[in-house]
Image 1 (cartoon, rainbow, N blue to C red):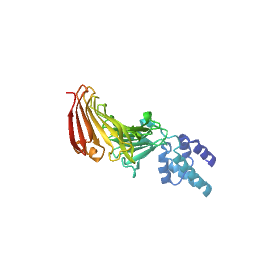
Image 2: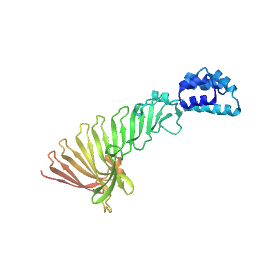
Image 3: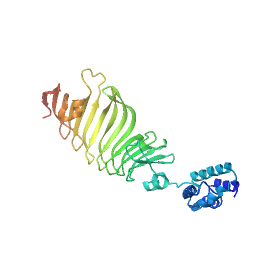
Image 4: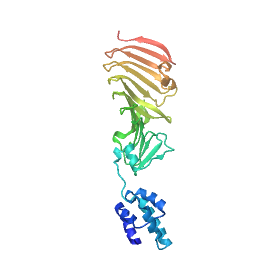
Length: 321
């Protein structure tokens, strides 16, 4: 067979033609061609015949060109690879597409698979998916992290995702969201002081009811809670609020929090003020009380006030008795 016949088959990209040619043409050595032809099932067993044809090549140049052609043919795969829809890919599908490679960088998975130009999938040693990284910047989702095969965390592109969602966390071994965070670019005024807001967060009970929600902003280069945060029980009833205040000209009076608790009818039970510092975050027993505290009946009637100074109670007064 001449070189023209070979290359017509080679560039035709058809395994059937390659198998036909393989019986007439040739290759490297008997053992090498036997191994190479294993990549083309239709050409198995033709290594010896290809060796004979190779030995009959008229010149060293023709032999060299012939060898390069065979390598190009095998590397090309002689056809189109199997395609699997991205949204349905599993570890079993991945095994059929490409071999795993060791992932020495990613902390979540030991083996990774790049699926086309769209995404990277990582699996642990038990072939359980660990994370998905989406490479397409026009997609709403950036990456998904899994624990025990269940979604643990989703990072979104907030400028594409619905409602400007940034991130979403899930309860262990469930697909139920525990926390969601949304991008915000706004201002909240607290006692005349404009606080830059960058995020709105929502936490959920396991039954899907909201547990609490509120805004995060920046005060003196620190990320802080801003404005009113609402807290709910597992039935959806408002139980308390935290109103984070940052006075514009606070002087000796530092940022503070107004903590309110509510009756089941939605009316306030009491209103207490604390300094907003590390002692507030440490727990109620460490909080420093300030200013005037107010107590209400279930009908919303003020019946008692308390005055605090330097963290100490200095006055109690009864009302509407």
